[in-house]
Length: 124
View 1 (cartoon, helix red, strand yellow):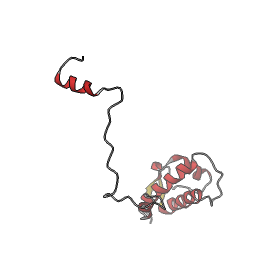
View 2 (tube, one colour):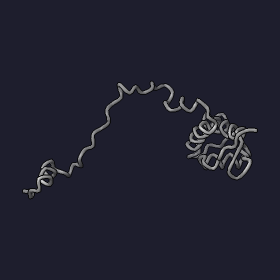
View 3 (tube, helix red, strand yellow):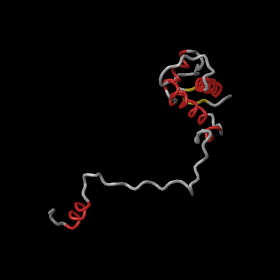
View 4 (cartoon, one colour):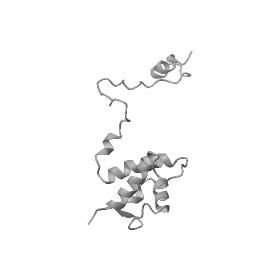
């Protein structure tokens, strides 16, 4: 028997669209089998790669990408690590990464204001 996965935590937009097209038919109102989640994953990947029979709807691609990520995590597939770095770009090397930016004061704060308030002096 396959493991049951809580599909209510999946991104709603693409998941509900797949349910409307009967691509994703969960076992219950809250859980789906691994096979059903794989069907949803395949459909989302087809949408992303424009090889599916979908109409292009604004915002649905973003939801499809999120569904792919969540389905891979739920199915415990190793491919999810591969998508962390976009293809064609080298993986960031912690030794060569840029240092974090220092927090800057807003331009309306003068450099003498901070020193005066720290010493308790009055502004001149």
